[in-house]
Length: 564
Figure 1 (cartoon, rainbow, N blue to C red):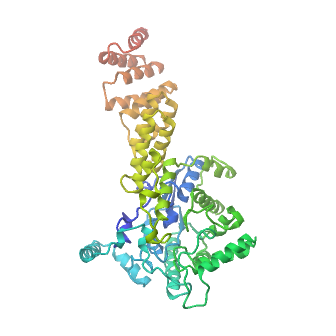
Figure 2: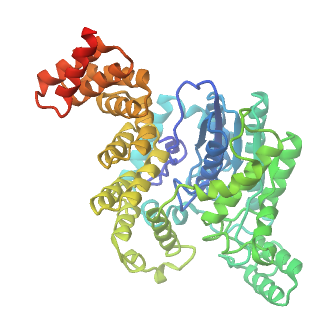
Figure 3: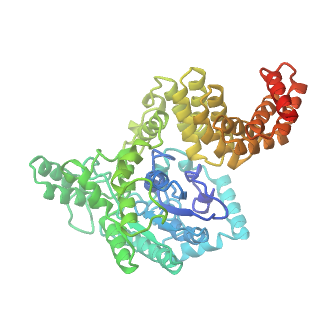
């Protein structure tokens, strides 16, 4: 709920993608924090599609003997005020590395100069107010004022439409205007403060330039600039398209960028934000990912468009994976990686990461619905052309129905995935169900119930080798009767008798009268040539279940061995 620090009037404030980490940092842990806005959070593919998930997955696969923790604390519709404010909290968690992809929301993000969530245009005052907001008294006063305003206000602007459409108060910000430069100064000032704190803590940090959809996103607001004799943005965009068709790639690229600059709606960061990032990189000797130019290389005619983007500035899944890849390359180049031994050579890591990427059809459908709803609102369409949501989210199958429930706030992300998993298992589509549970485990690695659920499904199907890793992880999270019992039985089948005995004995501390556990424990003791203990346990087994299959034969054999 930390987004409530920055959102005072907007309802349904954004939430982080709920990455987790241990309260006390354990040894052999590589801990990364990721900061930024919705692009850093992975919109619309949250929580699994962000570039940080590529980084995390590649680290997990490459360094299996290291405890990997990648925490993405990015939020939709926030800007450099949030980054500056949260850096002290991040630094207290002893990060090994910080990754920052931010700048698009500088004007309309929370507390920005063009945002409806505003505390004024003084950067110093806004940061002061954020500082005192940590005190309960300040929060009480703020919430009281908010409640009072709500009672007398009939304005519902803050509750209708997408968050993007609700945040832009000062919609028209001309190129090279006073507000335009205030946004740049705001960004560079806040990022200077943030990087100074990081430098003082001696924590490595990597910045990145920002990427926009140049080729396939026309300007949102095209107006005459009353301050300067610039052409209208849409005219420049049209010229760029013509030059592109003529094969004049460099000219087209320059014109597309100029059209973006002339767009009076500042949802896409101006080039001066990237210039500021490059200056900050130089000032603080900080590595920077030149994502803007690097991702051009993966685009037709070397100009980014819908091939990597879903809208004006958010990536598609491939785009997020590429952003993760270029971040990782800079991490590798600067030796910002775990010191433990690699399990995969560098030249194979990307392809293996992509082939083992955790994502599902349900998440893909959810993201499609999110984009459809986003583009059904301002500034993509006029309000009079806005369609009813039910007409643009077609429900053709069960996955569509679940996705619709989530997108419309009727069910949580976790619940729709869990519901789909149970449905798959019930329809004898085990592998699909297992994939959904694996996805939930990846998102919520500390929730022991998922380990229990999939372990039980695998044990029921006698897929013991597959069950072993889930049982072990579940045991590490929270030992119980079920985990101990089946770890003991499976290790007995692998002739690891001492390990088997350990788990089976522990299982009996939770439930003393399980004949199956006692029978297997007797067998484990017998294999270890501890015949007296084996006989004791088989007698207990028979006292509970006199007709237990094979128990009488084992007892007879043990009695002979004990006498000898």
